[in-house]
Image (cartoon, rainbow, N blue to C red; front, side, top):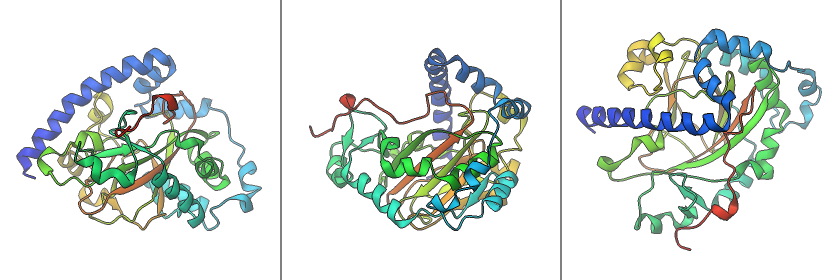
Length: 319
């Protein structure tokens, strides 16, 4: 893709994001005024620090006292938290094979929904057939937090201890997300705004931590997640003040340096923890679709960051 084309796509996405941001503020703000206040004030570090001090205090002993009940047996919590504080990222938290297989079975037997729309349902095994009708760049599953394996992760003492120690507050599970990023052969029509392949940060709370797990093997051609080390605590003033969080590769490289930009590779089951305030992005899968799971903890739950959907609203394309 030429630089000129990339630039046009970036700015097209920039203006789209402004519009979508305004719509989101109106919609979410009308449902929860606390979220609206957070989305404005939470950009500033002094406010985030104050909010964490006012949050419910932690009792780490409740997690440390029962490590044997964790499905993660070889995780050094102190080291993970240290890396998170330094860089906003810690890699190498592996999903146990049993849990991995349960979630993969769910992903194969349950409809996913193209472009996150509840009327675009199809089984992953039907993807090639559906692509003859319509091209999707991404597809999400709904109601994943109700699945027993994902509930196990949300209650796991090791993940909770990491989240509690890093957030310095009682961690609240705010939701999960399970989604595909698909190979798209037509590069010219690839819509990067739908797969979020531009650098951005997420402000879902004053303090928020996500655990990601690859459910397919991910290499350079499989759409690896990319994170900017240190960007959780070091942002240009314009990055904070401007309402749009999207940034170009050139802007990020100029400010943080190329060495801070890390693409994350791993076999299925490979996981990592990331501060949502870090700049990050998806990349376009070139040779293999990517399936990814996200588990999110925060210090407040605004009831807005989940994938729960009334099943009566979910329909398949072929029905």
